[in-house]
Length: 350
Ligand SMILES: [Fe+2]
Ligand SMILES: [Fe+2]
Image (tube, rainbow, N blue to C red):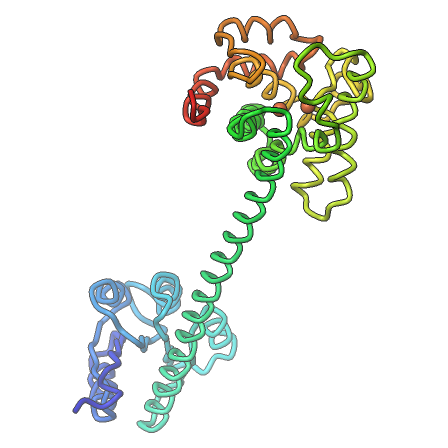
């Protein structure tokens, strides 16, 4: 049966052949499997070819210094233990080696016991570090999986809330999905940071959440709304804002902003606060374009979808009055992507 030491391969690097032979014999005697290299370059080549547990290297060598070998070996072979050996008892060099990742620094001449103890200690420490590293990797994976689950749950909750509000208004479930993708695409094309674009995608389905607070008789009224009824409908942005504004979650708070501002118009003629121009948060300006485009181009219970060209014309008529002109230009420049989203997220009945 093999002993535990023989499972570890040791690479000995020294330009003096006699030292390589001596160390090799001593470590063989202690049960380790050894190979030798005459310089750092040769050693690096061998490390690429085979798996070693430990590198035992001289410091002063031709071709490549032991310190350069140490640096590259530690960088390329994370699980390798390295012990440095030197004829010079130099405290600064020793500290430097340890800081660069060496497990130890041995001064020549080396006693057999000293060498074997240092090698055994280094291998023991290496084993603990490998166990620790694997444990941390597993932990990291677990945290990532849990985070993904949480994100998914959060996204589903937001989407479901958004859908619930849209259903009350006879909108289709796909409206919130399409609209949120239009919003994300537009945010990206505006050059907003990716994390903000993702937040906009997550939060925009909540734009009409305030419709939960509007009575069915008004919301589902088939004919034209009276002035009073229209005033009540116009309360949905503020109701939505109040539902969401105190949330701890960033996505829900952004949902509050979008709900509050998605009916504002660039020229100040929108509602509920008649905000104007860039005083309207960019997320609200983005949502306004995406929401109207989707409402125009898809079937609703009360109206059929209109052609994309016609919808583009209508959007253009609102350039600078209803919509932020710069954002609208960007939206229209990306019609290919818009149409792809429209197709991918089409209503099931279409
Ligand atoms: Fe709305
Ligand atoms: Fe909507």
